[in-house]
Amino acid sequence: MTGNHYKGHEVSCCIKYFIFGFNILFWLLGMALVAIGLWAWSEKGVLSNISSITDLGGLDPVWLFMVVGGVMFILGFAGCIGALRENTFLLKFFSVFLGIIFFLELTTGVLAFVFKDWIKDQLNLFINNNIRAYRDDIDLQNLIDFTQEYWDCCGAFGPDDWNLNIYFNCTDANPSREKCGVPFSCCTKDPAEDVINTQCGYDIRAKPDAEQKDYINVKGCVPQFEKWLQDNLTLVAGIFIGVALLQIFGICLAQNLVSDIEAVRASWTLQLASLNMARNRRLDYLERSIYQSPSPFVL
Image (tube, rainbow, N blue to C red):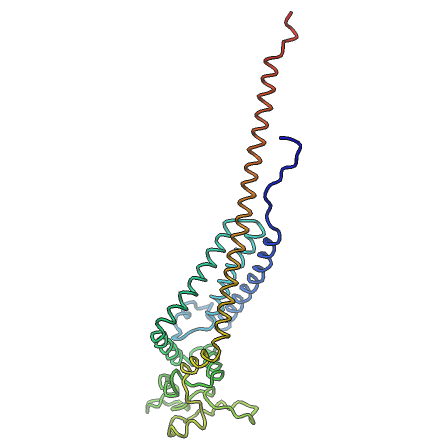
């Protein structure tokens, strides 16, 4: 080797620390969501009785925190540590995992458009299952109340869907005070009232249909959700496009960093090979010099 400085490839510090900084936020946020989910399960006694996780007939909202937090934690960990340690395995895992999520989102969107009637039926079935389990889990109850209040709806397709719940059905065998009623979240809001009347839905479905609409929302949550999507189509499409672009941007950055790391490793290999060749040439030259030079002991 000559005395010239060897100029090889370098890893882009800008890309490296951008990926690191961006993913450390996802990592911390994922840990926070998982911690919130574990705390919620601990408060409900689920951690002391793991089998109760599957006992709930409807959706446990804690699963949303656990699944979303777990995915964010895994992605953040792989991207953060992979970028910081220049670990190509973690960076490739980050890219592939992010690509799988992007593909699933794209597939879900296409299937939801093609099979929208089937999706509508499944959504109706899902809501009805949660109506049955309304009183079984406080988090599910709060989620249903929030949904009905936000979209001014009641039940999946109407207030009569609450007949599926053992506390609100109109059967003669129902001893509940809430018989033939609906949850308070179905009631129409009175701007003059500051305190929520939790008994406003009692016996309301025992009245004629024409009178019910004066006290409760008679539209179902499925039609209201469809209407909300149509009214906010630009916002929803913008969010999906923004998330997709963010995922593609993350994949491109990770692959770019992997290419830089592999190029640096290749340059190191080339540099080491050059050093070995130079060393071998020096050894060959020294050996030839020793054998070819006359010995000082020869007369």
